[in-house]
Length: 400
Image (cartoon, rainbow, N blue to C red; front, side, top):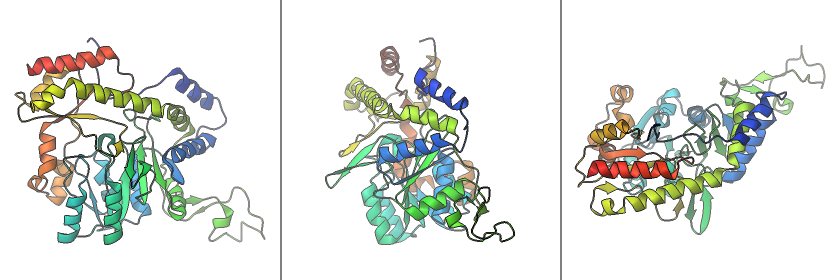
C-alpha cells in the first residue's frame, strides 16, 4: 500500500463542501442560523431537550463542569482510559481529578469500582463516565449510584454519537441525558461526525442550558426579560435598545461558527450510514481475527449485550499467546504504511497528573492490563476493501 492508512480519517463529500461554500457566501459566518439548526439536529438525534454547540469537546467538558459548580478542591472521578480532557476539565475548575478502574468487559469506567470508591475513599462532586470507543458506559447503573450518593453525572460521549443502549425495554441514545445531568460530544475529524473542530453539550435541564449558553459566550445575556441591572442612564422607561446587553457572569469565547455548524449539519445526514459502515468493518475485523482470538493471540473489542455501538475505534489487544510485543508490532505495521494508535496512555501516568496527584498504577490493574496490550486498527467510513484486506493480511503475516 503506497499511501499510509491512518487509524481514523474524516469523511468529506462534495455536498459538505457545497454547504460550507454557501455559508461563506452568506451574511452569517458566526452566531447565525446554522448554529441553531445544527444544535436542533443534534438534540433531535439524541432525544435531548437542549444542545449547546461549542468550539470543541474539551470546551464542552470544561463548561459542563462549570455549570455543575465544580470549584476549588472539588473531587471529580473519571476513567483513566480516555483522552486527557476527561480529567483536565476538572483541573480547569481548580478541582481535583481522580480515577477508578475500568470494567474489562466494556473498557468503560467500572460502576462496581466507583461504588467501592464512594464507600471507602470519598464521594465525588462529579463523575464523568466515558463511552469508550463508542461503547456506552453503564449509565443507568451510574444514575442509581448518583441518586444514592448525591454526585452529578456528565456523560463523556465524545466517541459515541449514534450509539444506543437498552434499559428496561427502552432504547436510549448516548447523549440523551436520560440517565445523566449533562452529556458532551466531540466533532474532531476522526470522530463519526466532524465539524472540523467542534463540540456540544446536551441537557434536559432548562436552567443548566441557559447557564451553559451564557458561559459559552462571554457570560453575556441579550434577552431583555432576563436582565438584572438595566442601566437607567441608558434605558429610558420600558424601551430596551436592541444593542443593550449584560455580562452576568465570567464566560468564555467557546462558540462554534456557522461554517463549522453547516459542515456538521451536512454530516449529520450520513450519521446512520457512517454507523453502519463502521459496524460492518468491526464485524469484518472480528471475523478475520476469530481464529487468532480462539488461540488467545488477540482479544477482540467488546460489543456488550443490550448496546448498539457506533464504533469510533477498533481497540484490538494482544493476548497471552501472542509472540510479538506491542511496540514491535506497532513499528512493523508503520513500516508497511499502516498507522495504528494506542488509545490511551492512562491519564494518571501522564507527567502533569503524576506529579500533582501521585497515583500508583498498581491501583488500576485492569487499566494497566489493557494499556500494555492495546492498539487501534484503522477504522473510518472511507476505508476500502483493499485497505481492509491489506491491514488484515499484513497483521497476520507479521504474527506468523
